[in-house]
Image 1 (cartoon, rainbow, N blue to C red):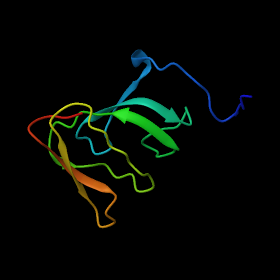
Image 2: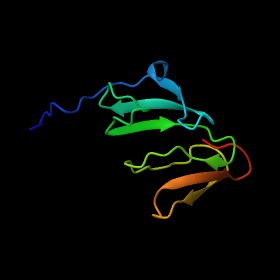
Image 3: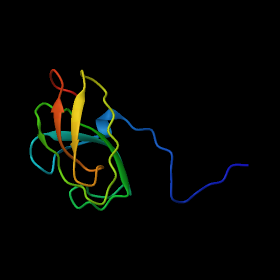
Image 4: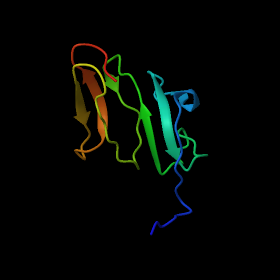
Amino acid sequence: MAVRSPHYRLSILREADYRREPWANGRGTTTQIAIYPHDAVTRDQSFFWRVSRAPVTQDGAWSRYPDYLRSVMLLSGRGIVLSHGKDGVTVVSSSACGGPVS
């Protein structure tokens, strides 16, 4: 028996519907694939979760999202070195290994 939840819905995500937006630190852009709730605004940090992809083309500081746990996955490129804050979890900067990554 399937249980339905009013909090989640299944949707087909099409690349044409992804939203491209600038990073909070102004040093790049991200392509937002999905966000919850659906009307949340990234800049306001009013979302519960979000999935996005972003090319990292230069070394430098990352935007701060202090109340969120980030998971990072390498999709292309040779690698990336992440530097963490004092808490050992928060990513504060990165260096690409041998060129751009995403």
